[in-house]
Length: 118
Image 1 (spheres, rainbow, N blue to C red):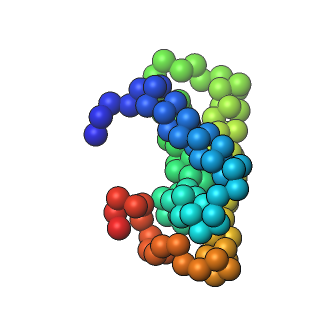
Image 2 (cartoon, rainbow, N blue to C red):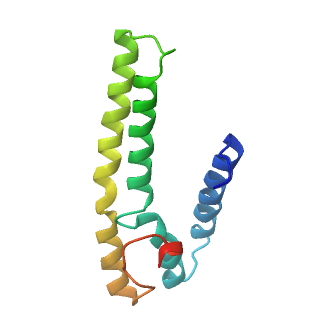
């Protein structure tokens, strides 16, 4: 796996921004669903990934020896974990995608896993 840098993360967020811009141009619904499907995957979609990322950040901060153990830091770590739970709750968006697929016809398999895993 290549080393992660802020630039690689910026590239990912720029891709999401490009997708948003594209969706604002009113593309064909089947094509739009196909593009959004990986983002809402029940197991590997953005809500699940962001929740895992927030929990991992909270853990890294809590276990870092150079982070001061103060009430403020503890509160910030708790807020990260709360946000992670809130994001994880959004995993149910895949049900919306399932319903949209039924309306517009299948746009791909609903197998668990990311596109690279299928």
